[in-house]
Each structure stands twice: as structure tokens, then as C-alpha cells.
Length: 273
Image (cartoon, rainbow, N blue to C red; front, side, top):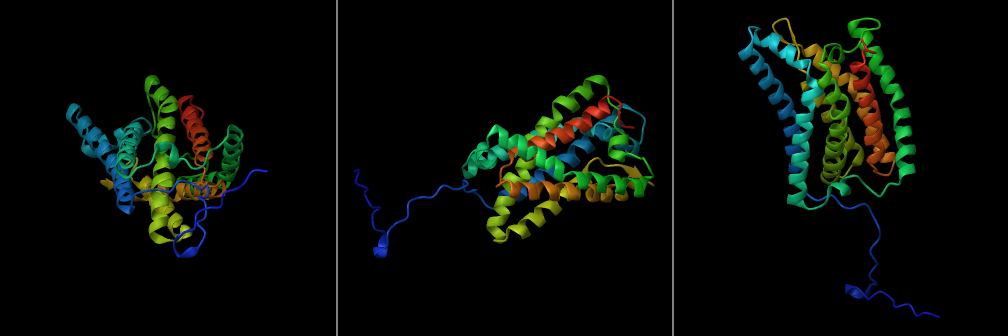
């Protein structure tokens, strides 16, 4: 019979408990989360304004028209925003410790990813219905959202929007909000439900900044508001799914890739419009 050595006594005469397996703790404070969100919004604005400025320099269109023309490329220049996001995430990991894999949650087997992704897609159906009803109410029956209607890309750009951008988006966007921002905010607020509410609202608010459209001589604030409203149920569903899956991010990332990649493919093939 093998003898078992008891754990050494801790201070005060109490027996020290052996370490328990758990999800790796997120290091760093809320400041890093603020930098990450601010970087994403700043990149959305900066890339669009820079592209519109270049169009003004090479053409005769006024700035407002140039901004609308630049908006047609948002499914391509989104890659620049996500690359910048990955750069900030890498910087935070080096500064605060941790690894990119640690941001994705507990180990996840292939069948858990597949089953979880299917569940996330199913949970997204009500959001799809809501978004469609909102678009119909604002822009008419059988209308598609303006951010999709204005996309008109050459073939090479369509390939990028289908094969490259959706992959970069999943490596960056959900990891930023669910892998970095939300855990840090949970630690600060001490209430997961409150932290999740703040993250979903901020995440939805980011969508107001892309693409920027012009209406009546100024920014189309109605479109910006509709962007926020249309994505809100999606982000709430995906955040809830992240909790339900034990903070495993890979199933959410795969489901989003299927959803966003499918939308980009449908646009590229002319199936939407």
C-alpha cells in the first residue's frame, strides 16, 4: 500500500489546500482594455478618413462623396483594423504576461468546437430575424442593410473580403472583447453581468464608426444608430454563449467566421442585393 504524504501545514496551523485547476487568470488592469477599444475605434476612423482624403486628392469629388466611396471598401480595410488590434493584444500580453492561447479559455476538443459553434449559430437566429425586421422598418421591405448594399468590389478585393478579412476578424475582434476586455472588467467591477452588459454596449457602439456615410451634408447618424441596434442582439447572444460554453472562445470564433464569411461570400457572388 502506498503511503500518502499529507500537505504541509500552512500558517496558523491550518492545512494548505493543493492548487485547484482553473481557467488561467487574466493579468493586467482596465487601462489595457481601454487602450484596446480606443485603438480599434481610432483605427476605424483613421483608415476611413485617410482613404477618403486620398480619394479627394486624386479625384474631383468633394470629401463627403469620397467618404461614401471609401465606405464601399469597408469589408477590405477592416483587415487593417484587425491587424492593429492583434498588435495591441500582443503588446498587452508581453507587458502583462500571458499567452494568446490563454485568452481563448480552457482546452477545447474538436467536437466541442463543432458542437459549440452549431449552438452559437442556432442562438444567433433570433438576432438575424431582429436585424432583418429592423432593416425592413428603416429602409423598406426586402431591403438589405446599407453597409452591404454599398459594397461593390473588384474581383481581387472580393477574394480578400472572403478569404482573409473574416479570418483576421475572428482572430482579433472576439478575442479583444471577450478574451481581454471582459475578464479585466469583471475583475474591476466584481459583477460578471454588469461587466458583460458594459462590454456588449461598447462593442455595439464601435459599429457606429464603420462605415461612415454622409447624408444631408453631414454624417448619417441614423445609419450609425441602426448599425448599433442591428448588431446588439448578435453581440449579446455571442457573449451569453461564451459564458454558457465555460468561457471557451473557439466555438464563438468559428461560428462568427461561418456567419461573417458566408455573408462576404454571398456578396461576392452577387447573391445579396
